[in-house]
Length: 456
Ligand code: SF4
Image (cartoon, rainbow, N blue to C red; front, side):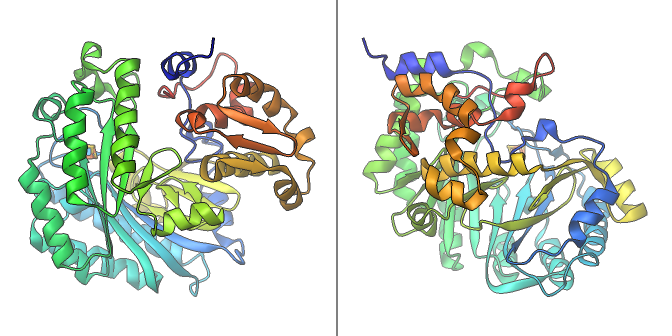
């Protein structure tokens, strides 16, 4: 008898990566140092775009589900030395790259970037423009916590050239909001969206999370109805990653309050159904957008890409990331900054850099990264075109992956044709498991396996 989707969820719910990078962050190592990063920055990068990420770690309070690198503080004075360190890091980096390379994408994440007051928002953007050339029509976006946001913050972002905003909504149910220590009313979200529209931001994204404590399908449907009514341009619906062994504050969340596998499936089905009926297209793992959105077009044209910010249209871009814990990326290097705020500031004060760890990718890493990305973005891997691009025979090269994919094919999650791997409709819930079949590090790891959140 064929397995139900719930049976499959139970079977395939194993710890696994989200593949915003490959190799994944646990394989970055401290043998990669500042000399390695300086060398990576100095490499010519013909045909590669540039994307700038700045991490603002500060938050007023701590949400108990938080998985970000953040610092909860009410002491605004802590932003002073941080902005000084950011400027120093930007200057040191800019001095090592071709200054004429324009950035087509710029993103502030956190933490809470709008923890910064409006004057400091202007100052940080002016400092970024002093060191880097930002393209005229660059996509400039900011993650925003609606609580404590004022219209003046949004005005400062708009005047500084931001054209996209992303608001953390998560769940509108009062019981869930209490359970995760993040209370925000519908009136508040409505207000910040109205301000954003009045100020002329091109695109508004809302973030939701499924799998939070106290969530039920019935109550989450009310959140979805509310969100559809607000009509954002895009939605990101993340699965809560419960990793209390890594994020100690997640121990505040009682296991008994977390939805079980059946409830998580119901939540995901409610998301797909209600956002689908409202006209949004599901892009890969966790993004939804309007049919005319460039993300949807990129998926259709097979130019979609996946990086630390999720799905993006900017394939083949180097990411220069600034701030504590941020991760930079070039064609064959990932580099992560120091994760401790004081040490980050201290080290940048000395050398302009604060490299904590990184990895130089082998050719095999690059091939496997591309294969995982193609599957997670295009929902298929065409052997002929992929083989031409990398000059390999795909069936031979990925004989191990094809063997591992066989049971998933038997369960109807992928189709293994001659010359093509295709993710089925059912398989879209299991993209992380499909990606894992290509992951050499997971196969090689023995007892020292890193511990990821569960895939389903
Ligand atoms: S606002 Fe975001 S970064 Fe800050 S604690 Fe909450 S989830 Fe974490």
